[in-house]
Image (tube, rainbow, N blue to C red):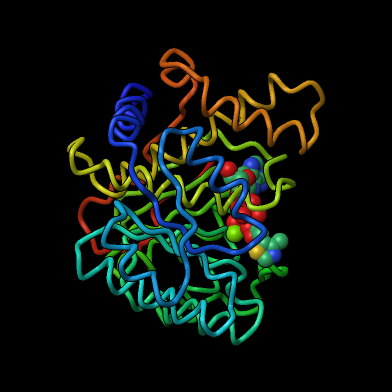
Length: 297
Ligand SMILES: Nc1ncnc2c1ncn2[C@@H]1O[C@H](COP(=O)(O)OP(=O)(O)OP(=O)(O)O)[C@@H](O)[C@H]1O
Ligand SMILES: Cc1ncsc1CCO
Ligand SMILES: [Mg+2]
């Protein structure tokens, strides 16, 4: 995917300025809402059990982050996702900390069964989710288990799990890491704009997932599918991270957080077209999904 295409999809998203309903954990709300606003979408943190279904009806896309696991929040997430599917609206699942505890893994599986358009997680989360769903068999003795909400695996280690999950569930799966990966189970794209220091900014991944939801809302009008929309969102977020770090007064997580938001607001066509690095890792021809012919680096 060329940088021009990334810019075109971002412009389409900004033109639509989609209302993105976010059901997310308390840690991520601030960065997520600010990321969506700076990038050109309208965030709304709406999770009340009695309201969520009506809110989905007015939203353009839905983000469900599992990491508030209280009973009423879990019920709200399910109602909202089911409503999004019934209304044909895109919804994105962030399986935060999947694999950390049995309760959390079950909650993620319940959401997966509600047919998300895109699942975005870190490598450990995607491996744990695909394995728990029975779509992928973890190699015996494999490391890379989740450490709370943090990954201990590299994105390339989650490629087979991501492809298997996407193929089995008919969704797109994105894995954040040194190279961000996105796959529909056949085609695999890699985005090489990752900024390692973003792993030190809490909820950077959560915010990234919400940005994918915003891009999905505008994708049909732009003639793009979920795979391209997710790749464009990953690239925009990555390029903004790079620009934010380059312009930061100090190379620390606090300045990066501010710089990321500023770049999402201020970046122009030139920076995006020149900076976006999206490459084809596997073309996906001639075989079922879930294969492992793609290589990262
Ligand atoms: N090893 C790495 N090297 C470079 N960049 C990385 C690396 N791992 C993650 N990133 C980048 O950090 C950002 C957040 O991804 P991360 O994998 O930390 O998500 P996450 O674990 O879900 O985060 P959170 O739970 O805090 O929201 C992404 O933009 C990603 O590209
Ligand atoms: C730190 C933390 N704990 C639960 S969710 C969250 C934000 C990053 O996923
Ligand atoms: Mg996460």
